[in-house]
Structure formats: C-alpha cells, structure tokens
Length: 312
Image 1 (cartoon, rainbow, N blue to C red):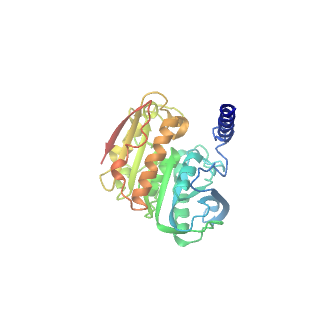
Image 2: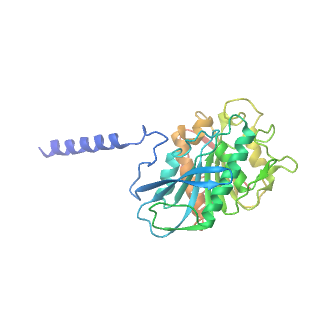
Image 3: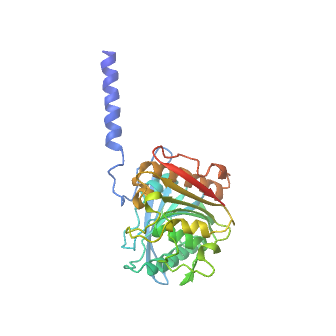
C-alpha cells in the first residue's frame, strides 16, 4: 500500500512539472515563469523622446528591497513594435539574480540596415540616459537603482546596439553610453563588407575603450548575415579582431551542429544555457564588483558542441 502511495505521489509530481514547464511559452509572454528566487513583476510605460514616443517594459524582482542594476535586453530585427517580451529566458535569469531588466519597442526601420543601426543607437542612448536622470517609472519595484552601472545583452541587431553603446563609432553618429559597463553580444556583425554604417578609418570597433565585451558566434553563421546571405569568410569574427585590449574582450566561437543564427540566441538549449551562465558572471563582475572574470567562457559548456575561446 505504501509503495502504491509513493508511486502515485511521484506520478503527480511528474505531471505537475510537465504542465508547468515553459517550453511552449510565447516569446511575447510579459511575465516569464520565475524560479524560486523571486517572483517576476513587470510594468509597461511610454516616455516621450526627441524622435517620438518610446514604449518600454521593466521587469523587476518582486520583494527586492536593496540596490541593484539595470540590464538592457534587446533582440534583432528591424523594429515592428513587439520587442518587449522577447528573449524571455535571459529576462527570467537576470531578474532571478536580482537585476532589473529594461526592454524597449524599437521603431520600425524598414529594410534599411543602416537605418536600423541609427534608430537603435538613438534609442539605447536615450533610454539609458533616462535611467540616469531618474525619469523611468519602475512600477511597484521596491528597490533602488545604481544608475551609473548598466549592463547590456543582445542578439544580432541587438548585439550591434550594445556594441554602439560600448563605443563603436558609426558613420551616422556616436552612440556611446558611458554608464553601460558590460556588453554580452550574440552574433556580432562584421564590417567588410559593412551593412550597419561602421566607421572604417579608423575602424569603429577599435574605438571601444574600457567597456567589457563578450561576443559569441556560431560556426554555421560566421560567414553570413541574419537572412543567410554570404558576406565574407569569418565575417562575424571581424568585430573582435578589430577591438583593442582596453577593458576585457572575449570571443567564443561555437563549433559543431546547431550553431546557426537562431541557435546562438537560444534555439540550441546548450548554447542558451552557456550564454545565461556566462553573462550572469559578467554582470556580477562588472556591475556588482564580485570578480568572476576568470570563469568567463568556462561556465555551462555545451555538451554537444566545442568552443574556441579568444581573449584580449
């Protein structure tokens, strides 16, 4: 009888967790499923910018009452008004670590990639400055924000956005955000040939000074852009090659199967787990000041892929 009861309890636990996993949750779920650290609160608002209304969403750890930092999370694409609620695995992980996450709806830039870059540069520069000036509404968040240290995590066009905030000089402007101390960039763009308007002489990537930058590229995407058009051999490795050793610079090349453009941001679960673990360690180091720099590139190694680590 006791054995039957135990088996029944085990079955109920299995059913409970099967029904509560988030594999089927849409990327646009505004409240990612929390793990036991914090419940995740969110708040939507709109702020007036020089270029028009900018919609944003903040995610915050409910019940957190200390001081924390803002991490900007940004996906790729050309801005169709649904950027909030994307990359939810990253949002979830950062809030569970006690951070506040900021997401904005990027303006529609059409198919002009240089316009995408210019819009994103203006937007990240503006929203980060509003955090500094204290004009952001955080809803029911009970803690305080250290506005002078912000982090950034982004994929594809979102990666370009973060690298501009880090100090990449563009032909259409300089969008550096001094308060952004660490950028975790998935699938960076090359500059030869150039799509985004990266300055060439001197190279825009070489102008990044001080900001910690961690880049990850998949073997299957390294020669092509997002839509899959061949650009040049090792095109996505050009960004790291051009950077100078001023502040931590790290590049990961993931080799093997399931390493294309979408795999790098999360369709390969092993790469997603690697990204989350290493970006958390990065923000712990460069925002909170708890040095985990020796761990970077060595955490949650994907079991079915090989990685090559380069550092400056």
